[in-house]
Amino acid sequence: MNTITDFDFNGHKALIRVDFNVPLDKETQAVTDDTRLRAALPTINKILGDGGSVILMSHLGRPKDGPEEKYSMKHVIGRLESLLGRPVLFATDCIGESAASAASKLQPGEVLLLENLRFHPEETKGDEDFAEQLSRLGDVYVNDAFGTAHRAHASTTIVAKFFDAGHRMAGLLLAAEVEAGTKVLRNAEKPFTAIIGGAKVSDKILILEKLLDLADNIIIGGGMAYTFYKAQGGHIGSSLCEEDRLDAALQLLEQASAKGVNVYLPEDSILADRFAADAATQVTASKEIPDGWMGLDIGPAALREFSYVIAQSKTILWNGPMGVFEMEAFQKGTAEVAQAIARASAQGAYSLVGGGDSVAAINTFHLSDKVSYVSTGGGAMLEFFEGKELPGVAALN
Ligand code: AMP
Image 1: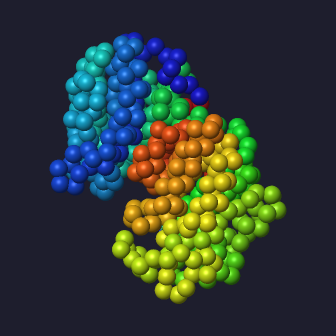
Image 2: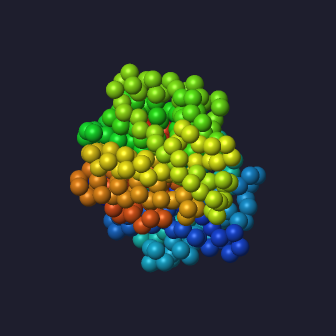
Image 3: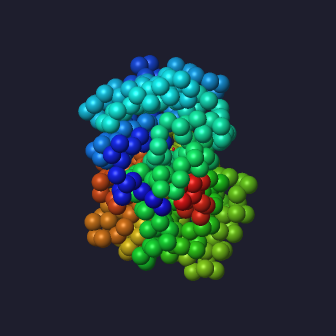
């Protein structure tokens, strides 16, 4: 894969697909978390530093039929200007006269931001004509939006075909994400432990199946663990359960044992008498949950076992929280698993944290700089681990 590292952008206009799909305050539309803006800075600064100019394009939110003020990219200008330390020009449409004229006037060192790509339904349809219009704005195409690399949209994939192989390339963020994912997927040092949590088995079944061929240990926590216990004949009270996944869960356990992969389910759980931060709690075995109670976090015995397995690991992949970490009463399992991963990383293990909620969790516990890599692309990283080729990455090759 070509990356921007070896390209001299002096005099070039780089059309960069970034992921500026940032959360905005509902009232003021101010950016409430600028992580994604910051993540694009190294690529933008490298190009500007070479003497090039940049045209930034992104989607923001999910506009339905055409332009919606609350999803305008103009809401990110202020924050972006202060992060870049220079003015950001704005085109009120991503194609047509406003974009073409602003792009043609762009001088080296200048930054142009285009209006929301998804104000045109052609973007998500992967429309060729729309992609071709975008392509005319710059002479080099850079994709730095790993978070949308699993979508064959016009700006993430189709546009690449209008640039020759020497003029389409990965930005630094996209390249780092692919490198981190590849390290775990193809070159994992053993023992390799995958920690998969979150609410639903159905969301994670494909990655779990793939992990059977990669991992030595699979730790399963969060709400999805109870479907596994129920499948084995356990009593799970009113814990989360996907009745239509009981067979899949059993099959997974059987395949794991046939392949010699150790699966660790949380031996005990912290129960709540209702789904609330101030619910009454107790600890029981996860397969003996009384009626009227639900498991909302892993218990102390599970934590000891999980921490021990993590400490022995040389490669660690973490996706999904161990419990309802948004509520203080049920965040201990997730917090301590995060701590265990941080300790293993300090001892030399390679750890990759990927997937929306585990990233939110690692940030909540201020441990993101204590793990080897935190992926910005939730769905994209998941699909990468499911073994799928990401169209946005393939299009650069
Ligand atoms: P996911 O997006 O599938 O990774 O799921 C993340 C969500 O799962 C978070 O919002 C957690 O609060 C939720 N979750 C984790 N453990 C449990 C549990 N035991 N019961 C209910 N929800 C859970």
